[in-house]
Image 1: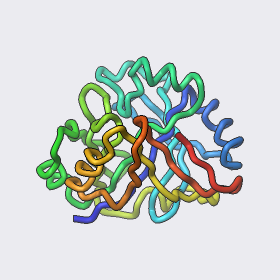
Image 2: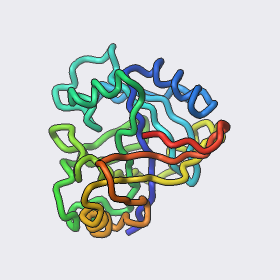
Image 3: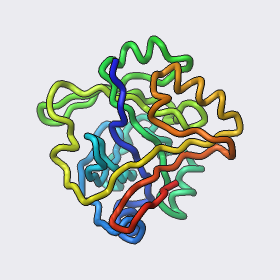
Length: 211
């Protein structure tokens, strides 16, 4: 089973606000992406190196109610208040070659597997039904793509690179244990502290940490 970082999500109150804030933080304008009909969200995306991508994501104000909790805690009132203050690191997503094995080996519930399609590409993604994120919000979602080039290959490369995923938690050993069981402990740095997620990036503005 091969696991690697697929993408990482920065939530914002609106895509326009998120793009403006990223221009200030990173020195680039994140290009428009697509809509997610099943979740009533939309995004802006760009390459982040090593067949991974950076995602700005927000609730789509023009979309109908999705009839379920949106992914990445976007419907959570606490998340919504935090996003009115500034964009926030929401989650990271791991590309796996065997999603069924990940679910079988997982020490905790990663959520249901939701099927998505766009054009001739399909993918399966773990999404807790209540829209929450497992492991106190620190564990990744898992995605398995149908055969074909990674979506990042069709995105713009604006010189932004993911350097590290950083996790902090009052009980870091517990988080490390979860990551090890999921075979993703090599993909994130874990430290002791208040519960938090951040992404260290190299950008035209230098090294930037988004949390």
